Length: 586
Ligand code: CDP
Image (cartoon, helix red, strand yellow):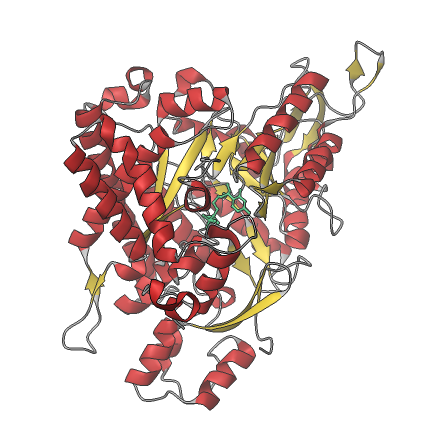
């Protein structure tokens, strides 16, 4: 189970088999013969060394060394990990360290293919891209140069999808995209249905860009005007409620489209004088300006817990440790902005001007288990709010300290923060990322999601299947004396504890899994984190296979009321390709 097994005496880092597998395939450096040439500890050393170089501009050589040591320890102990491109590319020739980008798409053939080329460049370096296609003229609209008819945004979407298919990110993984179309675009119905057939636009998440005006029309049962973006003139009217139902129905069937609440996002745009935000990165957690990028990092909450004494008493949050890791995490991400190698000059400009970072968390479900709080309880929501308020406050404190030492971000004086009284180094500080891969490396639950299952089979990369048992469950089972191989086999067969004999009720309650958590509770947790997150929150509202269309509508409406910045649902079994599946034999 240890990395030792894989790397001999060269590394004493404790990693799960899955973590070692993922690291070897995609993160550890390889030579020309494709042989792995570094250990996981050496990987963290490479990243720490590279990122700490930024410190040389601000401090003494001793300060550089101190930062390097702290960065290394924080990663090696799996307490903090930066987003995948940083782990893969730091200290390499590529040197591109950000996960999140937004590229503008202008309404012309040159504009569209320029964006396509920019996307390719970004994917090549390991980044993911978000686009708003809202400025493109609708299908059938006039094309002056040829007197012909325009193809419309949805047909262009498939070109971006196809190009993504062909370019493998940094030679390591396929790119991810977000495609957004405003709710008042004349092609919105076609957009809503765009992923209706299986196997189309598989490299895109789609979200409708929702305005408050539209939501008011939905709630009040009114008509709603569609507007041609080329002319700015209405091109027709549609019942807002009917349009909303189409979104809900399509999401129920396929998981797409999600919604992004553009007005709410722009009310929190820290730099409105640089223009409006029209898109987010692929998984929705970072609203960005055109040509802006953001670097993410996540603290592993499972490791921010102080052991209960005596042994069986519930553990508590180690707030001092958490504060310390938040401060160093902010510093790490701020340093990355300096040492990053940007794929385009335009991206370097906007990113350095606003210095947005996204420090977040993973292992939230693990932390709750250790604290003895059921994910599916009101206490979990209250606790989530308290936890994130602490992290946000400390992130701002850290950013303010950096501003004192290094200066505020260049666009600070014309940002919303200028009225706030204290200077900040970063226009934004927090993001809740999915942590799809880094949570595997850290061996914790992903992002703020509940456990997927207590035991399950994970499909990774071209057909490999990995069997996993939740380590906290194994530990409690041993401590409380109900551990047996038969019990584990029973759990593995169904993925859930519900029907397994011999497990105490309080343990069953604590290990509630994602499809048993009511949708409303998923949403309440998302909203609780969003309340104290200046960027956005990646969360999937997982629904059981028998969830109803009305249930989805309820969630979409409530997400807007609860001031989420976006919403994504997934109904079990509604997509052909699932990354995780339950109850399969090993
Ligand atoms: O765990 P990891 O750092 O690999 O990534 P994540 O937290 O699951 O995703 C964070 C962001 O990375 C996504 O929102 C995308 O912007 C980007 N990403 C990507 O471009 N391609 C992927 N295959 C996965 C993530």
